[in-house]
Length: 494
Image (cartoon, rainbow, N blue to C red):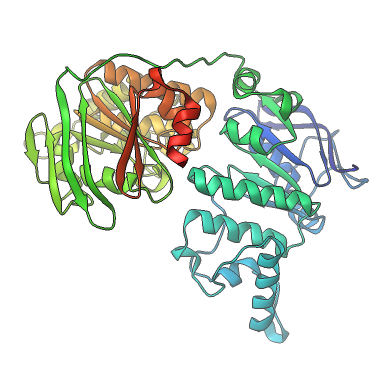
């Protein structure tokens, strides 16, 4: 099949830093092609060059269906059928589904909006990929998965020939991911090329025909997805081998940190009982709507149960606020670190100290500069946060380092129970490995850990035992050392 896009010798410098070095890549019409690499490998820069947002260095060539360009601008890129769906989706939350899909396309005389045409365009775009959404619904009221569909429909309305999906599954459950991958397969049938960027390597291999690997701004190579597995890809991306083994330690005779009995909140979860011991990592997994996060929020005082009991170190708790939970020694790392875990405009140091400001203050309620710097630097050092200056805004860090800041914030409280809700969403393989190491070190020092994730390998290889939740109830338990990853997956999907 003929190529839709060819990139030749694409380079990009930012000051003295080479973001890209002589990268070649080709995309066939109707192909599903994946672009992988660690954070900082050049993936985002390459996408922006294709989208016309950034110009490559002189000497490179961009060829679209035989027509050559030294560089593109956004208008040219869009006119040639290139649509980028960024991780933040770039939607208008206060507008309807139809308005977001057909945005800017139907203005009449004196710039009056042609509402009938907008709805016709939206319905046609949804029909093109067999998506059914309420065109009158506000986007802010939709789930992340539905917003993703709106963004894809918007690309269809723009007559996309190439759809670039930048981390499209980062905030989706496995069930939603499966639906998205089916949609990508449908785009292929319609002759639409997809460039798929993801840190979730199992998804990359599931959907791709070919994979291009970048490392430190240079192309490592193009590979057939059929010849790859996640371990080979991880090695190509990082130059390192990642091998995880299941543990077989039995914590049941150890000190019980958390004990939950018959915890119930109607409509969220029911009759949940579990124990977590000192140093134990307990995984909690399940499909969309299983009640995992609702249960975790109850442990953190933000979704009070109607009945049942929570005990921490033997003390019965009646948690009604997250402040109470923090004071009792419970820490919670949310799935959405950007919205719920960090204050992005504030310094790294401020984010680390935010949970313990009252403990650092003197009798007058003041915190000395020496104390502030010392405690913040200790958090940076203990979590190996790569930051040239702790007073830089936390938004300047990579996803993996941002997650380390969230962990540092909670480690400062010296928790007895650490709840991790999808802790590696949107971070690359090397950053994931670093986070796993941190969590295991915390457990080794006696912290009880509840690891919530819908990524089966994450809980299988990094939890001492795994609990399965279905429709708000615990439905089973898996001991990884005595089971297999496939058996756990089957139990979750049963």
